[in-house]
Image (cartoon, rainbow, N blue to C red):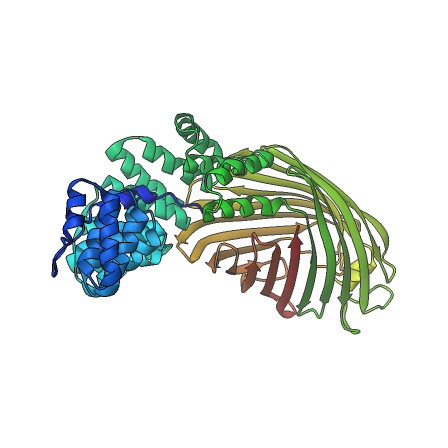
Length: 612
């Protein structure tokens, strides 16, 4: 996630140079006489002659610290900042423990636009004067110039511990945010704002860091407080547009950012927000084009490089494999292996295909064996399809395929039709109509049962903190049965932190079949389940994470006299979200009560994808 420079932080070398210029050279201490010829040349501002005299003297006596300092002064006056800084380096070699000399060398290297060398001398001075706040402040500014955010944090922490000043607490919190220590930064800003609620600058920084954490509701609240103090100024508009872009509100972000861009066409931050808006609107080609000015302005920036890979990754062609295993208390197991691929024709259009082998097994005394007595049924199936984004509001797609089922299951055609709608910024609706093999058990597969499923998946975000997932489905099976299904899951974002997201909610699930045909699949007349839901995501990095989902609840159907307790648990390890190699490894467990006793089911799935 790209990061706005926080207020009060120099955005480049000019801020650091101004600071360095404030550090004066220590006055020379003359232990020995200064050559008269050099002094006369200085009086005439004949810098080259003065420098030549000093160099001749230093050839004979290189330990004359005072002459190295005068030479540095002459060279600086002659417009030779690098040579002046090198002369002070020579002076430092003669008196390495002189803090004033170290600071003079640091200032000289800063004037020469060499921040690394300047910082090296400043850190040495800080070791000699560990409690000198002015030295620590200089080092903090230089470390920020160099981009050493961890050193900035260390310096700001020391300053705050020495002074206890509220302004230094704010600077320490800002440094932590820039270093990516978001949780600690937020905690310090909250301490600071509790005592200084009307500090508009702190509110702006706090809102920015909360946006980086993904705590969009908290960021919006802070920006509202800022607006009450300062109004809807350019700073408020820029941070609000970025927040809305990240929070999947692109059409709300657009007018704010467009006005800012009109006033400053080459502003990197506004251009970055524009790219996020286009990406959020699914204007894929335009989002890719919007990367070009970012590359031009900051080609080596981490923000630019991250923007490139995160924009391109979902659109790239790829090939991959999938493998899975499932087993349950009814002694039904499934083993599956698939090869798949995607060919991106344009950012809006792609083709895809998949070949899959599925092996359903059960025990010889199971009521779920195949109709010809087989305990194992193999299914070979495959399909090809295409999807095209017609507009930001609509993506359509379709696929055709075939399946061959042994054990008397026969050969069958498959299809799928899809439409992904986004009628509002905060509302997604995915529609599908599919025809698939109903391979719940060897028996259902061997009967050649197919399911024609019509489904609507809905995701709604009424606020920045509240969400609703829902599914509505109607299915028709080839054995004459019908299924209706409703699932609703409202939840709330309880935590958004640097490393952990946590959502808590409830869910309701209803499922109904017209008939109980005993054809090898569970077909309840009136299944109901009500549960709590908890989903946590541990972020190892922008590319890697671990998701854990737990859903304890109570269920019943027409065969049970009352509600029974059961739990769903799933764990998923994700690697390489935006990298060339992407993988997912998941494991899940469910338990239910039924008339024949406890029902348990386990599943493991693995996916590996190579992007091109």
